[in-house]
Image (tube, rainbow, N blue to C red; front, side, top):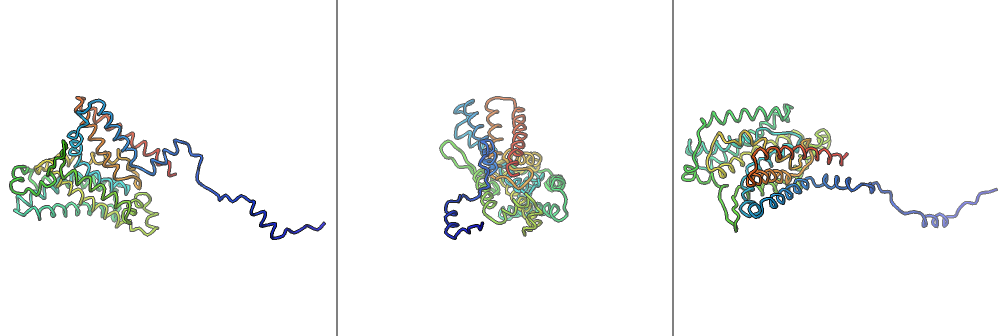
Length: 359
């Protein structure tokens, strides 16, 4: 029997009754836990923000209005201003899958340079401060060159630079402290970031304002500029970034140079915070660990390429809340270290879990 060939109108009729649904590849079967994991992956600053809010609520319940007062809350900001600036710098390095153990030492040395140029050489602060900023940038660029060009591990480079900078700090300053009274009388510009403003019961310093402004500026640059996208790309996969046309070496050197500049600004903030210039300031030794702690608690991945610099600010504030809250509660100071250690391990565990959302 001969087969009947369908006419064109039959094809159109069949087509009009066919399923017009377009193929979809999104996994709509994701569980509630999977959706949470994806949400946290897309918003890396959300976890530290939640922890910060819960910490504030905890101590508000334990201490009442004594803790939840304008004075106490702004005191936290004043206490973390140096660590906050250093954490912003450390964040840039860690986003490139590196680490910088010299940030605190650079801050101290550059503050010493500013002080020595003013009081030893008789230069005005308008020259001494830029000299310190240039020195910090040069040190950072040197570390970046060793990492990018010589291919040395960031940990080794910055560990060595930490020792070199600390030694140079003591040798150059002859371990001499410049008193706050002398600075206030002869070079008050060095204490610029210590200028205080009263708002209600709160007390703000320009150092706090600078810390917050710096974090938001860097957050904008990282999210909305080509350079910022290059930083994330280098941290995520440097080989793929290079194939995509990113100058990986130039990006790494620029990051370390910028970090050196930010550390020098942290040195200027230090003078405003403490009033004096001291080569033996503890920031040179523990500032590195404090900044890394804030970054890790803030949800920035130590593997690079993921995280928000706002999280680093939240991380610094979390540490500040626990330090002040436990002190006001009368707890043993060792509880602060214990809880911060638990937060570091917990934050790293959460980061590992969140990273699975991208695989």
